[in-house]
Figure 1 (cartoon, rainbow, N blue to C red):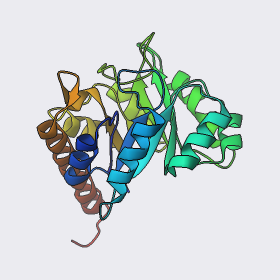
Figure 2: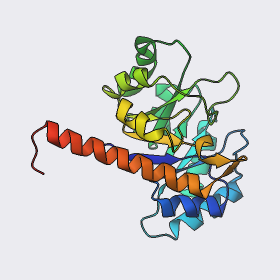
Figure 3: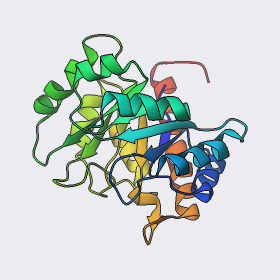
Figure 4: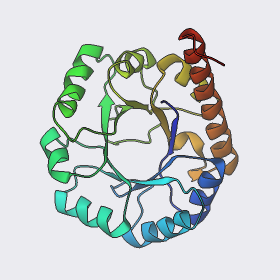
Length: 230
């Protein structure tokens, strides 16, 4: 069932409280070099704040080509629910990690569906497979959070074959259209809910509300097309 809403790049207690209040499913903490990177101590405080809430969002740690030991240590200490791998980690690396994983794949401009499928498919050959593949737009220097938009037609084709979380340039104003075009398992946003480099509470609420409404329309339309009872 589609409908996951992931907000990434959480840095302050205020960020995670607003995101939880808005109804996000997953909150991303960045442990790779980035303007949104958090220290282990900062992340521990954010985890404490989130887990004090009823029906708290799941916590995701984002890593880029980190060692197996580093990921396992941080994920274990913080009791992260999911690990997001945003680098060149191989299918064998995921199997050795043995942690619930979202595997990010950055799509280059002009890359074909077949080419991206060839990169994604090996992760789904043997158990444990990723919870989802996160499709993001390619940037030569930055692993994510760039605000660049992904080819939605390509993402839609892959979403018919794999559990896809759509990222790349999403904003409160565009997320509904993206969901209706791609029909992904979920959506992910970071820069699209920021103003002046900081998370914006109004943008967070607007993004989650727009995404939720779009996912609900998909569920309703799927039910109608399958002849299900109202």
